[in-house]
Length: 161
Image (tube, rainbow, N blue to C red; front, side, top):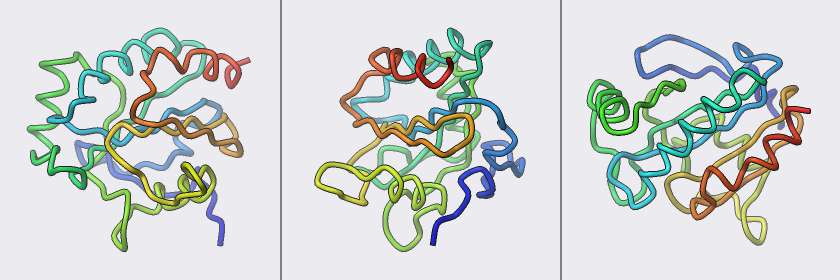
C-alpha cells in the first residue's frame, strides 16, 4: 500500500520530530549518507547544491546509514560534528536509519517502491543513493551513488521551474 511521502515521520539528528511535509512546496533531495565511505566527499557537492538552490526551493536531506560496510559507526553527535567540521554541512541531517531489510525506514521503503533501481530492484546498493522528489511529492527520481551531486543540476532545475 502506498504511503504519502510527505506524511512519513522522521527524526532529525538533534532529535526533532519532522515529516517531509515540513518542507511542503519544496523539491527534496533525500540521500543516505556515511562518514567513512569512498563517496563521503559528495557531502561537499550536496552542500553546494543546497547553497545554490535553497532560495529557489530545494532542500537537501541527509540520512546517515551504517548498513554498507559499517561506514557510519558514529552516534548523532559524532555524525553532526564530522559533517560540520569536514564539509560545512548546513542542510538538514536526520537520525541514522536503515534503508534495506525488515528494519528499513518507511521513507526509504516508499522511495524504493516509487523509484526502483536497475532491473526494478527494491534495494539500495550503497551509500549516497539519491532520490529527488518534486515539491508535491508525486514524482521521484533515483540516482546511483556514482552520480555526483553536480550532475543533478538539470534534474533539480526541472523540478524547480
